[in-house]
Length: 208
Image (cartoon, rainbow, N blue to C red; front, side, top):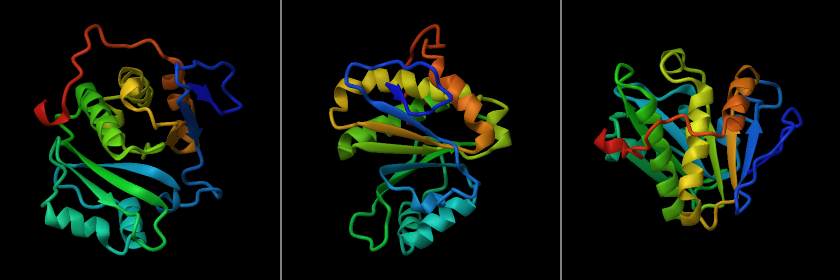
């Protein structure tokens, strides 16, 4: 695992050299817009009964309505464990090959196990799709950040990549897209490579 951020002074290398890239330009003049992030798999999340965020609406417009159409077809409402994958490869102008939207359930039931289950789901889908690059935006959300820190979320992601790396022979890069304000928290999560869990339950998001 190699960090391509000049602020990070050391690196932790996984056997296969999966690269974690920290991209803290969300909301800045350099921000291309979430809909223009070039990646094989873009990961989005939604809470139960929440409306599509502004970012998701931008992606939906970029995908000519394919995202909202898939959500409507599946009656997707953000329930924990429910998810959809949109194949964007044939959509003109699409910057992503696939978009994954995962339901996290209600804010009241959101916790570290949900994050763990989410990361497992993301990597399982990355394996099925055979992607080389995975992008996870860390959107500002006061309600979720109050219950699970950004650093802990990223630390969980690193732990899960280690767990699944042998099943992900094609994965080369994991991109973390965030605001400049969140940079330090994500950086702390990347550097805190020791698992925080006393006992790994490796939960499935749909079975929590």
